[in-house]
Length: 290
Length: 290
Image (cartoon, rainbow over all chains, first blue to last red; front, side, top):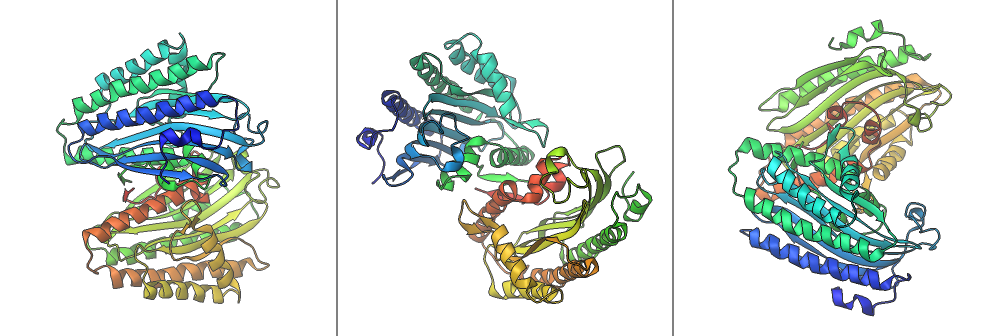
């Protein structure tokens, strides 16, 4: 049975006390997926998203479902926008890695949206955005967004950071500085001594005394992304480029692969599960040169 | 100062008792590198190997040197054949990972040859070959070779395995079965539930009561490789192929990247050191599609 966002509440009750928040987050992520895909399709000259819904019935260690959306076009060479909502019991090796999982005896719930866009034109930056809600014996939000240009452009970088700063400022005064630093630290390739791109924000284990404020911040990040990235694409997608610039893009993408396969926690988590590699490796670029 | 194989013995003495064996192994690997590169150049229609010698003087934690040889041509789309010989003190985190390194107080010596070839024609299999000698408070050989076709060909697979079997049989009766099984186990992608290719042999910590017999086996593997792989290339390099077959090759190469960045011990070791990423990432294919 294909998974439908609206049917998620009819499945077995998540083993946590924060059902309403999880359900609201899942509903928001699902809605955001739809709006982002519409915005991207409006910019794409050839192609639309293909949708693939998946579900795992109860009886699996982790059950629930999700929907992957993938578009391969002339502007968006490869873009994936995935949502999922799963709950159940973690594999034993993750109990010590995920906060509160020992206390919950491995009970776990997660929903999220994950997006990576690799663009055909070397003057359009690649982008990543991820928002998620997790709960064990504790509950928290995490996520972030970062921009990876082959040829950094000051205007794009400023617009991207300004949008994210706006979301952060609506949350608390020091959030932007803190989450920007965390992003620079996380999206770094030690073996190359290179940052992955021009940064953005990164946050994890966000659990203030007011979960509804945390959720409002996560929504603000989603809206900030939707407000700024399509504008950057629209501005840059017709910039002329030559074969040499395209080659530089393919080489830059190699760094992206190295980061995601070697360091990215989400990908590492995927390797440790029996999840579909096509989902957690969605981030890998369409064409890469080394 | 560029490194020269012949000058290695004039550098500081390796802190081990097996200087003669290490020196003989390094000399053999260096010689094998030259003969393999000549054989590959004879098959290549456009291009020759570029040589890059490197050295690290004493004062570095690990010192010594090596030479990377890289060719990008029409037959060999990207092939690297590297040799190195280093000694000194391991970084503390490796002391518990490398046998005998705690007893040697981190003193370490290694020399080896490492080869990966990615071929332009989808009907020529990619290949990997690695031979190495390591010493701490103990000393051993390791290595192997495996074949990764996009379109497996029974004749090529049989020829490759027969050659390696010959090398193994000259060592001991059960070596081929044991090293073939180890290869199938090692070159496997659990997240894809796929083998990397059609196998070969893999061995590590080879340290019998007769080190000269171990070294003779390692040389037999080198000679077997040189005897069979150029023949496979010669037989397949002019096989006609279409764009769809080439696309399948690029997708197959993605699995190679996933294996090397996620599972390969040599690559993992490289990430943990301050070694040149261009050397330990030499194995990454020239062009890849996901």
